[in-house]
Image 1: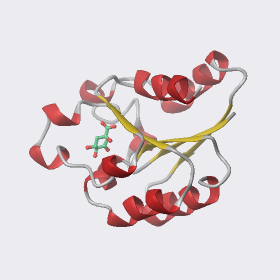
Image 2: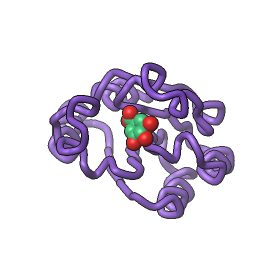
Image 3: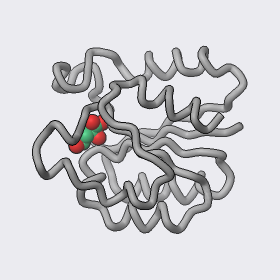
Length: 137
Ligand code: DQA
């Protein structure tokens, strides 16, 4: 089973960025922990601050991976292009948010992506990525 986690803008700063919202854990450290938890899954990780790079990665993996876990960061709320990319590919996508976007500013309550995704996990911290892997399994 091949799964990729794709993280969008500003998520390279996890552990440093607004720790009261996103926690203190560095994503690379968490990702190593995920690999230990799921030794039989081929897990890949990609992060980019650029919309086009996220779309390229969805195209590249979206016809051969068993699952895509996508936290598109702020692009979640704005990107018709990422929404179209999810429609264009075959692999199922789970949308993940570390924070509970529904308990935050109103502009975070709407996702351009959710309707194209198999499901959404929000507000469970980094645990959301782990639950998404478990779902694909
Ligand atoms: C986020 C929520 C988004 O609203 C925000 O822009 C992010 C992170 C989350 O994981 O909680 O960058 O996707």
